[in-house]
Length: 233
Image (tube, rainbow, N blue to C red; front, side):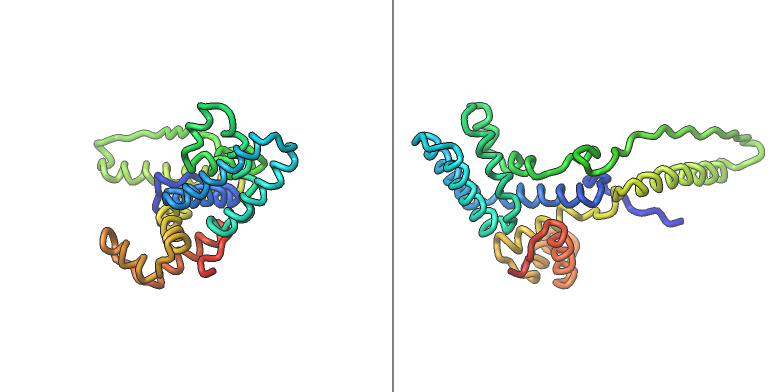
C-alpha cells in the first residue's frame, strides 16, 4: 500500500473545520496589507465615536454593522463575516489590554474559526490512540532488515485502522491539503493585490518549485471554493 505524504502544518479536520481554518488563514493574510488594516482601524474609530455620543445601543450596532458589511463584502469579499468583525469591535472597545490585542488580524480570524479539536458542533474529537506492537525476533534466524520490514508492516496496519476510524468520524487526514496555507496566500494575491495567475506562478517559481499558470489557477479556485469567494470577481 502506498502511503500518503504527511504535512506537519495542516491538522486533521472535519470539512467544516477545514473551511473555517482556511478562512482564518485568508483573513490573517489579507490583513497583513497596511491599507486594509488602516480601513479596519477607521471603522473601529467610527464605532468608538458613536459609543461616545451616547446614542442608543441598537442604533450604534445597526450603523456599525452596516459599516462591517460594507468592508467585509467590498474588501475581504466575505460578506458573511460582518458579524465577526462587529464582535471584534465590541470585544476590543473598552479594556486597554483588549485594545492592544486587537491590533492583530488573528483576533478577527479567531471569531470566525471553529475549534479544530472537535467541539462546537463539528463532530467528536480524534483522541490519541496508544500503539502497542508485541513481537519476537531471533537474529540467528531472521536478518535484521527482514525483521524491520515485518514490524513496519504491522505498524502500518495499526495506523491504517486508526486513520480509518478518524475518517469515519468525518475528518480529513493531515495530508488532505498539504499546500493549503500556500494556496491561501495565492488566493490573497489574486483577490487583494489583483495579480494574474501568470504573475503568481512567476513570483512563486522565482523562490520555489516552478509551476505553470494552470496549476496556480486550479489551486486558487479550489481553496477559494472552501473559503467561499469568487477569485474572478
